[in-house]
Amino acid sequence: MWVQVKSAPNLIIAEMWKEFFEGEGIPTRILPDQKKEPGVSGLAGYRILVSQEKVHVVEEALRKL
Image 1 (cartoon, helix red, strand yellow):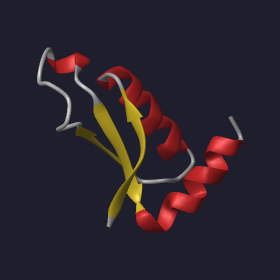
Image 2 (cartoon, helix red, strand yellow):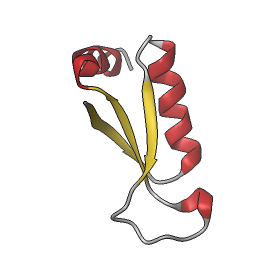
Image 3 (cartoon, helix red, strand yellow):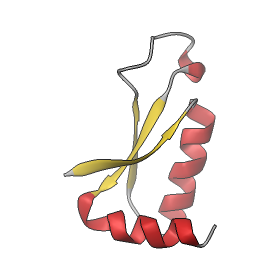
């Protein structure tokens, strides 16, 4: 099961989080935030998701920041 660990205001920041997590060996998905109003493609909100089994690894990676 995939769970949300972060949210991002736009696709650029969402992709930055994805690159960071994947650099730590954590498979990551980005999905548009359905709660936000649809608008310009790059300006919609996004959810960053990881496998539920990797949440503890995400917490460790975020501590390093």
